[in-house]
Amino acid sequence: MNLKQLKNSLFLAPMRGVNCAAFRVMSKEYGCDVTSTPMIITDDLISDSSKVISRLNLNKTEKPVSIQLIGNKNGAESVSLIEDHADIIDINLGCPDKKFLGLKYGSYLLSNLPMMEKFVSSIVGASNKPVTAKIRLGFNDNNSLIVSKKLEDLGVNAITVHGRTTKQGYTGVSDINAIKKVKENVNIPIIANGDVFKPGNAKSLLEKTGCNGVMIGRGVMGNPFLFSEVKYLLENGKNTTKSVDKKTDAIKFTKYYEKYDYNVSFTEYRQHIMWFSKNLLNAAIIKDRILRVKTFEKVNEIINSDIFR
Ligand SMILES: Cc1cc2nc3c(=O)[nH]c(=O)nc-3n(C[C@H](O)[C@H](O)[C@H](O)COP(=O)(O)O)c2cc1C
Image (cartoon, rainbow, N blue to C red; front, side, top):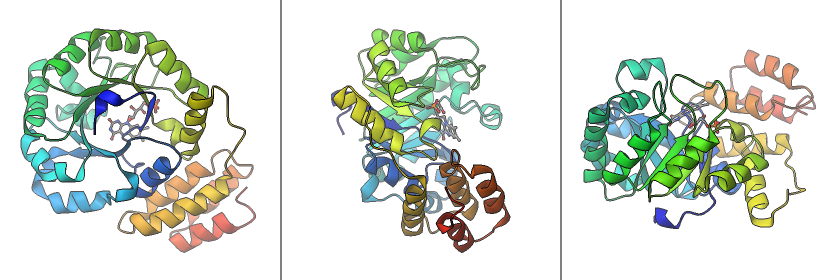
């Protein structure tokens, strides 16, 4: 995949507990250009690669797919185990989860540049596939210009920037201006990330930053149709009048989950169906009923009942 050609490209954000194969396939179908797996811990990959890879349920329909690695060692070995399955290898330098920070993974590396350099160069050096990195603006303070330049020098092919620091978590707003500065600071493609919940958010993020693509996370949970709305707006300059029926989407998701994710957990499936029902008239009743059931069949009964509207 040639990342230099990215223009107004739509990326599915890597999301742990969300990006099962069914969700990636649906995102692709609705216009997402590059899907992503959730992060994979390099140590897990080394200790049991076939288990880790089989749980991803990678399939041709979702391609091109980015596989994201998180860790601080075993970079080259991880690449050798995963690269045949990936169109892009992404490095997680943005995770703010305390457990991972404690292990010195994710956005911890934004505060330890020698360690970041070692991990990133081990991956870049071993990979025959394009390598991208996903960063926050910094750990406590914004050091994204230093980090992005360093990543470019290390041979990373593109960078995704979420416009918040680790310290911020999800508070405040994603800083569009800071993302723009990163874009102006390097010569590799930049993908803007943060707070896209409506088609107009994506358009203005692209226009204001000059970035090559936009990555969407929370906005597509239970609403992968947002990709289609964004694509339409970017191509036609106006909003689409089409809408999607959430019941139809929940049924389609179920069909895909049965097809691709048969070996993944029931609770993950059930959670997706709750996201699909979030803004429905009977959302509270649906949630209450779904939380009481324990089988795919029972969730299906709820989706197909009159309550699911
Ligand atoms: C449930 C959830 C899981 C996430 N898992 C990951 C992950 O595995 N790797 C990663 O780099 N970021 C992860 N993120 C962060 C998102 O990729 C994204 O950067 C962040 O949510 C900001 O984008 P948004 O405003 O479009 O949601 C996760 C976010 C959420 C909400």
